[in-house]
Image 1 (cartoon, rainbow, N blue to C red):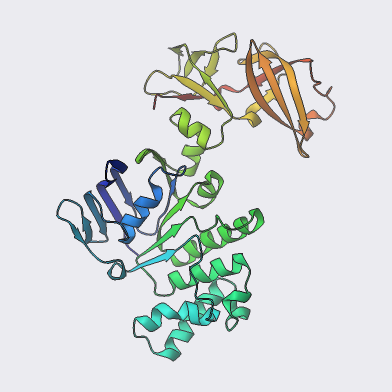
Image 2 (image 1 turned 45 degrees about the vertical axis):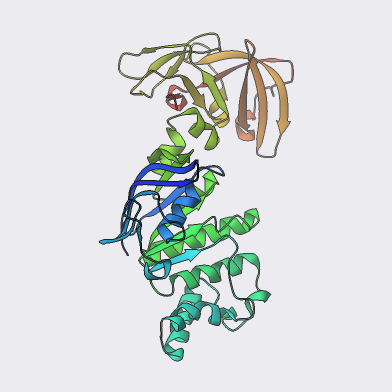
Length: 362
């Protein structure tokens, strides 16, 4: 296990800058996700760490070893960096068995055949595929193949594990299953891991820290709870799934902390969170919009129901307040014993101040 230190990393392709002055340290034994949409620079960053791309500027160190220096043009080849890598496409050899695929890195390193098989069998058991040890990988499901890919990446106990959107080819149920396997393996092996994904749920479930990337820059770095609950900008709020984002016309600091925000909802919206600059917008999740029992409470608004959709355990409402639409997701249990909101009807809803997130400019 080693740290990964990225300092002032830049990567340009002609006139296009894919990464801009990225500074990031991944601590020993930490799992850090690079999260963002296509084209934000997350995979290019991973490829620079792997040695598959050469930085234009900046440095990358793995442990105490400098492996890339953009200014000097110095780079250590990928095979000399002691890394394991898991690809989106599995990258397995279809003519080999599970044991053959997992043992291959050891055989390339000169490990005796019997020892390589023993270590491969241990790793295959760790990923829960001991019964498939001698099966051709072509006979395995997608989820099983990705677990073989994980076993192969970890069998040499690399200093760092790199994962490039490894779950994107799997269906929803398999993604959850393999996601849990990755977190379990990380906890058991303690391997430092850099993980690339565009899926915010995946990043939140797996990571010790998340780096949200936009246009080649790290726009926010924090714990999954921080990123999920306190996104800094409108881009991040929308990317992590906050549906209701409202422009703020003016703001005032509240006594005791927080903000009073002038929005299009007709009266001032109170946020218990304090931003270190004047908010330009605010956001709240649809599941944080609840039917108000007391219209005298803070952040209560009267709305017209534009649409109502039953989705099983929830009912989704589209509300309108003074020309502004607000999404609401009410658990069915909260509607027990109440008059169900009807399309065209009036309803009072509330957003608790602690659930209103003030947003800074990008």
